[in-house]
Structures are given as structure tokens and as C-alpha cells.
Amino acid sequence: MLEMLGAIVALIFKGVFIMALLPPVFLDAVVAIGFGDDPAKRQWIGTGFLFGKVVDPSIEESKRQYKIWLITNRHVLEGLKSIYIKFNSIQNTASKDYKVELIARNGKPRWIGHQNTNIDVASIIINPAFLKTEQRKFSFFRSELNTMKYAEIINNQITEGDRIFVLGFPMGLVAPDQQYVICRGGYLARIRDFKDKKSIDFIIDATVFPGNSGGPVIICPSAIAIQGTKPILKADLIGIVKSYVPYQDVALSQQTRRPRIVFEENTGLAIVESVDSILETIELAEKRLKGRIAQVKSKEKKKLIQNNKNNATTAPNKA
Image (cartoon, rainbow, N blue to C red; front, side, top):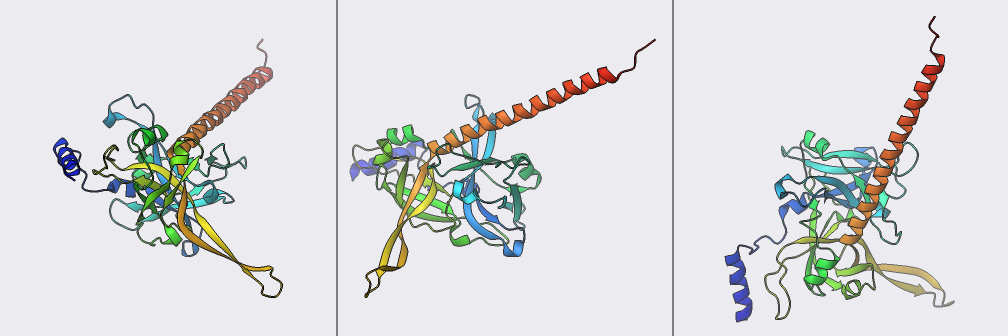
């Protein structure tokens, strides 16, 4: 006990003692995802969050630039032509829903999913300048400052029993005039298989519902740690909610003994995709985005060359 108190006192004097367990800016990075052009009938089906991939982490922190991505689950976007995402106003007026087209003119999706279809992560690029012009309130998770990747999970000795937060909009609980994300607490239930690279995801003990899909999972800071382990000094993004783990029970007919009804319940456990999978998805999206830009430039160049040839052919001869 004295060792624990001594650790807390040391943290206070070092200036890293954390009073708020969850940074408020994390809440402003989370958005509700819905579909339906009629606002009165719009359905809120999932959660997403803004993620900033740093362009150059070597420069001064205050001068760094970021490419902003909307991160959610692949299954939230599949089968939809467009979605709506909700943002609050910096003037504390009513929130506003913004339409995001998911299908390009060539019929292909604008969003990019992880190359491994078993990893349920998708990304689509967002224009932050437009949101600023619209005076929308938003923040984003910074890739180099607010994340805990696989190597850091190993180094920080993250293990079962560590506390986590889950942010999202379960059961479509989205107010029409303002967006207020719901925060629920939980624990890491199983992560050693992920640490041993036997699994691509991990499991949390936190009750999530439809609508939580695509929401961020945050490791909770803790100044107190048992002897031989490390304290968690700050909150970080460690993953994205994939789905809850269901429990199924089958009702049998007393006469035929054949299954008649299948009951499904929420076990209170949920599967989480890692931050590494998010970064891999963004890297793939950046490559494809560069490829698409290169294709457009190539087509424009060929068109210009062809126009010049046509003009040269049709030009009149001078006497």
C-alpha cells in the first residue's frame, strides 16, 4: 500500500497525475452514422470517429498537419449509397447532418476497407476545412499522440483486467438537436492471444448494442499498479468496436425434438479490432487515393496531347 501511495505522490510531483480519465476532446471526435434522406425518418445505425494521420511526425507538434479520416466498420457502410454524419455547432446552436456519398461516379465505393475482409474496418477521407467553414465542433484522434499500437501494448504490459471506455451511439440514441456520445466502462477480457499474435483482434467485457459498431475503445489511465507492472499514464485509442459476442439457445419441440426457435442474447462481451488494423486500412486508402489521382492526371494528360494533335491536324496551311 505504501508503494502505491508513493507512486501516486511521485506522479503528482512529476505533473502527470490525471484527474479526468477521459479527455473531453475524445468525445468531440465521435460521430453518429445514419442513413435516409428524410430527416424525420433518418435511422442512426452506427458510430464512427475522426482519425488524424500525421503527415510528418518529426516537426514541432503545434505545426503538424494531418489527413483526417472517418473510421468505422466495413459492415456499417456495406450496401449503402450514402450516409449522414452529425456534427454539433461551435456556437451551441442545433447540430447538423452532413451527407457523405459512398459511391463514386464509376460505381466503385469511395470508402476503403482493410485488405483482410475478416478485419471489419473502413475509412473514408474527410475535409476538415469544410467543417471549420461550417463552424462545426469536432476533434480527432492523432495517430502519433492518442493511440496505443501493438508494440506499445506489449511495452506497457497491457493485460486482462485493465479498464477501458467504449464511446458510441447504441440503439440509435441520437438527439435531433445535439449530438452527445454515450460512454460506457468495461475491462479487457482477453488480449493475451492478440499479444501472442494468435489473434487479429481482442475481447472486452463491456455491453455494446447495435449502434455501437464502429465506436472507439479507449484504455483508461491508472496511476496505481501492482508490483512488477507499469501504470497506465494516459488515455489512448486501442481499437474499434466490431460486434458483441452473442449467446444462442435453441428451443426444441417436445414431440419431434426438432429445433423450433433460436433465442439470441448479448453475452456482455465484444470483439475489438486493433489500432494497427486502423492504420493499415488508412495506409491502403492513401495508396489507392494516390493511384486514383495519378489515373486522373494521366487521363487529363492524354486528353491534352490528343487535343493538341487534333488542333495540329486541322490547322490551315499558310501561303
